[in-house]
Length: 202
Image 1 (cartoon, helix red, strand yellow):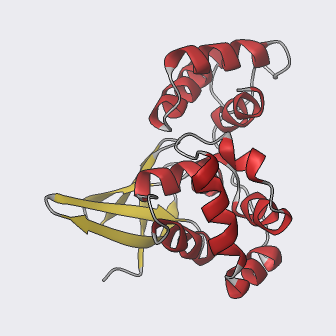
Image 2: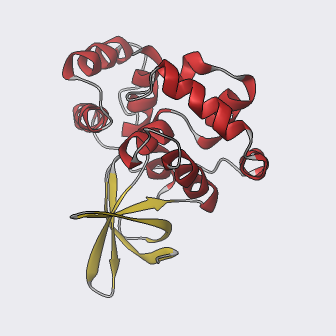
């Protein structure tokens, strides 16, 4: 139904973005990968859309690239993987890293993502290995990461905490992970770096 939304980036966070189109704000749920690619608030942006409808639920999922949206659609087509888990997967690993795991058959990396157990990780590998066109597109895709505006350390740490809770990690896990990276991360690091580092040690 919707191909893309093109408008002013009114608000962004690691889990959603609001796009202002003609005075109407469209909330799009996004992955961490898409968040890292977004421009600054107040600038124009285009997100490719997946419109999700189920019973009384209607949600827009936004993606910085068609390739990421294609992967999302393949993920939700796999048994027991819904949109929330699919977004969690695309937040835990970039599309390039996901395809690398699939090609290597690396289930251990996938199992670290919330909502992905042993059986789901194996299903991901088996079912996505056959998607030759997507594997090719991701390998050829440039990994363009947007730079977010830097803010003080505590603010960014708090944003990282909230984003990881949204992704499905519990408070104990998140606090432990963020505490571990506090000594090695630059105090001026943006929120996405806090999240990336924390995901590596969780």
